[in-house]
Image 1: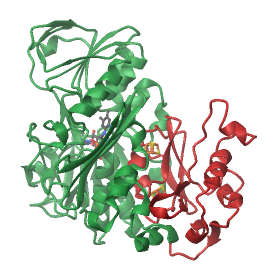
Image 2: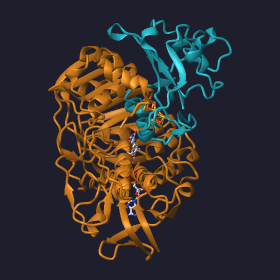
Image 3: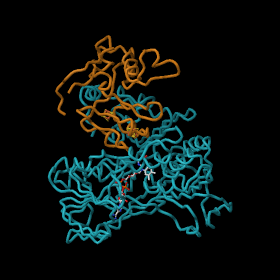
Image 4: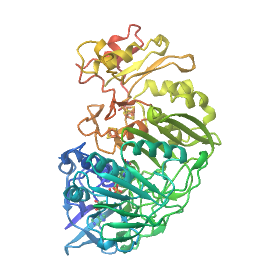
Length: 447
Length: 146
Ligand SMILES: Cc1cc2nc3c(=O)[nH]c(=O)nc-3n(C[C@H](O)[C@H](O)[C@H](O)COP(=O)(O)OP(=O)(O)OC[C@H]3O[C@@H](n4cnc5c(N)ncnc54)[C@H](O)[C@@H]3O)c2cc1C
Ligand code: SF4
Ligand code: SF4
């Protein structure tokens, strides 16, 4: 089989790519290969499925007729094992060979499970990355079940929220000294922790599982914990094997997991002074700004398997979020179809809620801090050299957050706006008249 | 396509449009019920009062809608020029609130995000415009490039 465009992966980056190609090329043949057998679905919605907020059919990231409308051939439930960039072929596990004109690698990431003694003896051990994980958990879980989650990041806590609703007895452990270290500073992390604890979830921080004996964990602090179900959500690793097999350049990002990326682990951003580390040394694809993989021809990459250059830090790291994956896929699609496009505005950002308390965060937490803290309603804006570096908003303070996000995205010179007014409340009145009238008089040209 | 535009010089900052908007989208039959009896209907239009000026702002139905591109659920689409949220699919993560550069998506009751859809579901005439007694917002065709 031969296609003009072949995409490996069937998620956010793939959707962007398909839509990007079709803006410029209505005729070229497109095939999508994925080892997951489902219609393109929204990965973050797996926790909402487990919680019972959505049914499986509501998880479609694109409508049921998406492949038909875009004339896409699907090769689902099939795993790609290697790419030969000379003969331009993708080798599938089934033995089939798929020829491509242009190839997008959008393989995302896989869960990282650190080696722990006796893990093999655990009954009911799951990851929390895929629809099939939820299906497996649903089969194993019972009301009142004792669940141990390793990892107090976004993925672990989303699993905890869902299972708490199920009526499980939840314990979450993490080696870090606080929850959500990738997106919250110490103070906001504590507020969120209290909020989640009030809903029944127990935390054990500064500790990790040393070993397992069947369904008993021995923690590094010596404690023993019994559980019925174990979920490991420690981190993720990008799926880079395919590009490596093609000869693509896979390098360690300058920093790996970005603050605000779902998988990310970052150093504490205490007291408005963020320090970040490359605590997980994952390697992502290096692409150029057109999303072409360096070192090979006719191959592009997008999404969680790639590193992006973060405009708020100037460093490269994996920014594992849906908006980034989609945007990169779109740029790749444009370029694959022959149109010029560049992805130049990557930065971490996140909107997420736990038990009704919402947070919206973006960028990095360095510079001067404007701060409002009123119970669970928190605003922290970080700026330096007349640029907004990042923000943490919580509770009622999330209102109109996008106005702040735009300041980061556009790298707006804060001396051209009424920043004091913006600190109090995000508003268009703080912009120069010309800019404001432009927004209000037009359909908006958000780029 | 017809959109809602502001006449800044006519806006008195009375916030009446916010009430009309909230009522129109509340599903209530009577005005007061949208705001009493423990309900607090949320407007999708916002009147700004900062810096001594007043104007109303709501979704611009962007040429390149960031809310739609960034929605984690694929719940936002553009239909005949109107950017809409499918409430069946929306999970209320508020990535759209994070993304809209003009602050035009509102968190609505905890479970869903809402935005101006030009009253396409309320008879087609924007109720904010209808309710503004000053002509400070208008619904008209200005022939913008799409
Ligand atoms: C529980 C959870 C909650 C999340 N919440 C949020 C959130 O609230 N907001 C947000 O922005 N992001 C969130 N994320 C992150 C988001 O899901 C990812 O950033 C996004 O899915 C990345 O998209 P992608 O297209 O790069 O790849 P992925 O979604 O990872 O998809 C890659 C696909 O490729 C397939 N694949 C890989 N290798 C091969 C191969 N060799 N052959 C065939 N197929 C292959 C994989 O099986 C997978 O289906 C969350 C993630 C999880 C797990
Ligand atoms: S909600 Fe905001 S980003 Fe979305 S179309 Fe409206 S103005 Fe544009
Ligand atoms: S709140 Fe709803 S519409 Fe907005 S991004 Fe999340 S799922 Fe999409």
